[in-house]
Image (cartoon, rainbow, N blue to C red; front, side, top):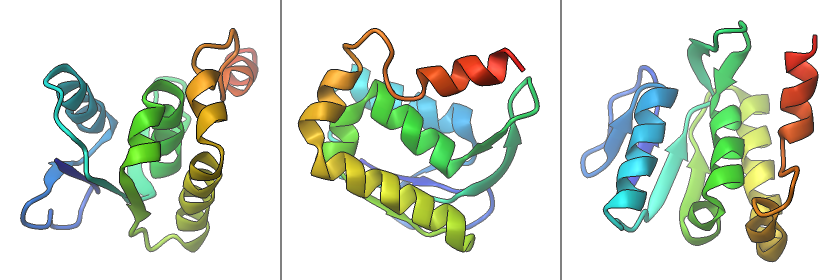
Length: 127
């Protein structure tokens, strides 16, 4: 399976499309449950989506979610960003590069008491 996350661009032929975070997470859940190999994931950054607290949900948000919950997909899949948002694209690419350079740390992080992003979530919740 190849997943293309984008809220407005045409989904390329041969790719499973996700227009928002819910659709993206559903595709990841399906791949996990059905043991479908994820060959590639292409991220857009600006998805025009916000959570219940008003925080923006971006491709960067979702690539971090993927790393925290399903690190094997970042390590074993081709991950790219096609976003027009230069900074957003670089943030996604930088996160993926760090994950691929430190796969053992990424895999063990989800077993730790406070995996990546936990402190950030707590800080936002307490604001």
